[in-house]
Length: 388
Ligand code: CAA
Image (cartoon, rainbow, N blue to C red):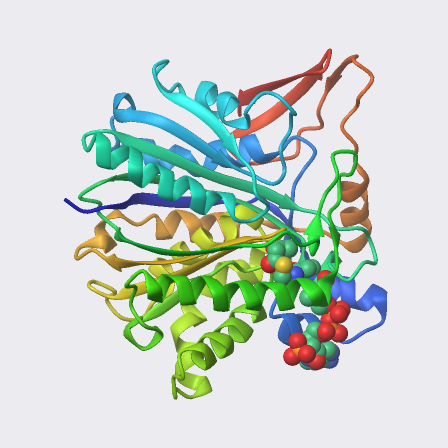
């Protein structure tokens, strides 16, 4: 029996800022962002959107072809938790009308936790192959204005159904792991923006890649030269180029830069235009690969490198299933991105500076999102969601 991703879809806000607008205000060349970090736009959430509304929107199309009663567990991965106690997934469970016997829990480890969720989901399905696990990863990347991280903000959510005999990609059992207690990126409970030691974080990312890949090889994983494509955690798209160079070096692979670039290019398209989506980014990279690869991916081996600052990393792989194209949501993704509204820099600042009222009163949220779900109000500290 094979286990893996049976269905996958992503969602991002309907607002974005072009990084040229940011570069103009900063009086620098837009190419620092377009080429230097490989980002064109960043997704910006409206006041009535959060990780719950984005995750529920990402999951909605998956329910069209799945019996809700078969969903045994919902695992919600996020860095952008909305409550210290209640799992964000419980709100999504309600919005989607999932069965009451479905267990729900939230997982946290910076950008890594969606991969822990995928691996746990595979273990659950191995025990009960007729069940499905809904894995949601949803995040809003926020840094201080004028900080080095500002241009790498973004938002997005991905939803995956993990099941037996999957329609899209089988996950291989080998996985390499690496954990080290470091402070490269973190967000204390009292802050709404992340703190980051930018250059250090990229060095730690590459070190963790080397270590996790070495462990993956020790566990009997496929060598770099046996992989056809790589999906990396994408804090910004150019990170994939740095990672490819690192991996080729670790494996003494002699491939040239153009070949290495072709192995990741289709995974980057969505990230370039939505920005960092933390836990979701690696799997939005997989959606991007499915939606943009020129060739039929059936039988192709894909390597995955998941990285969460702090840090925990994992390297694993999978094989794309023949016939996967019949189960993609490509048109929906592309229409969603085409329908987005561009913000001016002044509008961006207004969105950025919006604060959730914390006084315990009854507050309606401004109606901004065009997505299927919205945060309607905050009443006496309770978040009230609704379908739009
Ligand atoms: N045209 C083309 N390229 C240009 C350019 C221009 N006009 N101007 C500059 N560049 C190039 C630079 O040469 C540089 O290239 P190299 O990386 O090849 O050296 C690149 O653009 C970036 O320029 P800087 O190094 O000057 O950029 P910076 O210091 O302002 O910021 C950063 C880079 C530190 C990564 C910053 O974006 C940041 O702090 N980001 C947030 C942290 C982050 O994303 N870390 C990634 C690893 S941690 C992780 O993965 C977890 C997570 O999600 C946060």
